[in-house]
Image 1: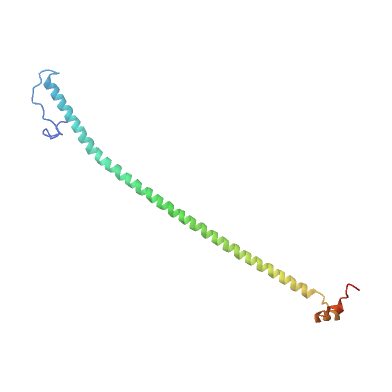
Image 2 (image 1 turned 30 degrees about the vertical axis):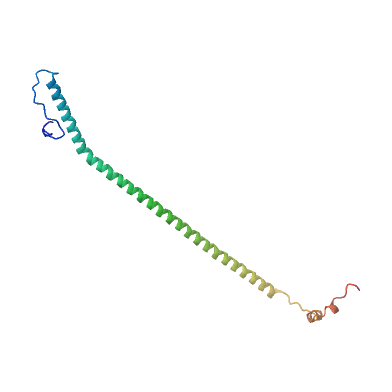
Length: 150
């Protein structure tokens, strides 16, 4: 593991040059501290080398998610506007069809009424009006209608 870290790295202290005589002496403690520092430095380098691409990948995925959310919102708005336009179009078409139906119904009813009236007129007995009707048309009502006081 120590071969991965150059011995004269600027962030690492120099390796102790003393000789360890027994466990726990001051030189042994310096060597252990140095080894611990090298190990921590290697671990940080490894984490940085592994974590940096992962952080970049996470940031890219978060951007993609944000873009996809915006696309979804845009598509939802488009769907809502198309739905509203379709509903309005259907309502207009239905109203137009109902109007045409009402006009046709009124036309048929008028036609039936006129046909019935013509049939009644043709089949009726002609009424002959006597001389009183001609007098009524002349405007001389006093002669035709007797006075109520008599």
